[in-house]
Length: 153
Image (cartoon, rainbow, N blue to C red; front, side, top):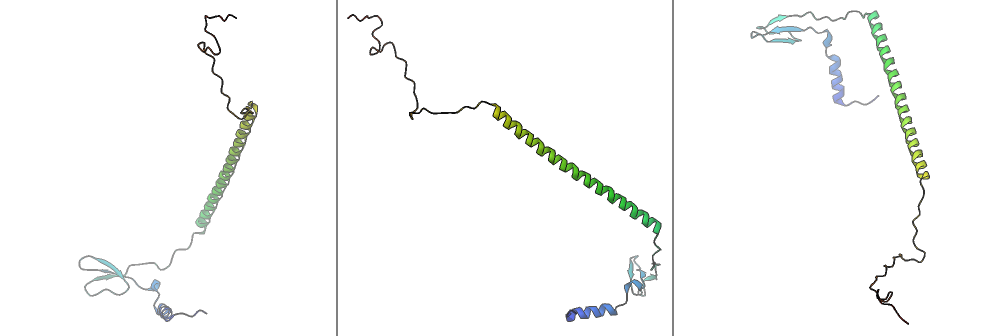
């Protein structure tokens, strides 16, 4: 058994000794100005007092209507569960289709890359960049003589 604090023990004792509010009478009091209040104690002298008829028992449960509502709720739950399963299957099928499409796209890209001719970039073996020689100019006498002069020997 748990040890209770003195405050908890006092509140528990007060709650046990207090009368049950469900069985208490309710008084409807109307003040001279027309204000209406509901209270558990009798009204004062200048208030008009009445006791409203508040039922303390509930009517019996309609078993046929209750079972009909439970059956309807069970049918609704089964339809919702079937819908969730269908949507889950569709989502999985969609994801598989997208994965298959991606695999097909990658395979096509690899096939296209394999079909293309391959070029290799190579540099000269002597280690330098090859620069073409400029074409000799006609006025350069070192290579060519004057255009009109013939060399006689």
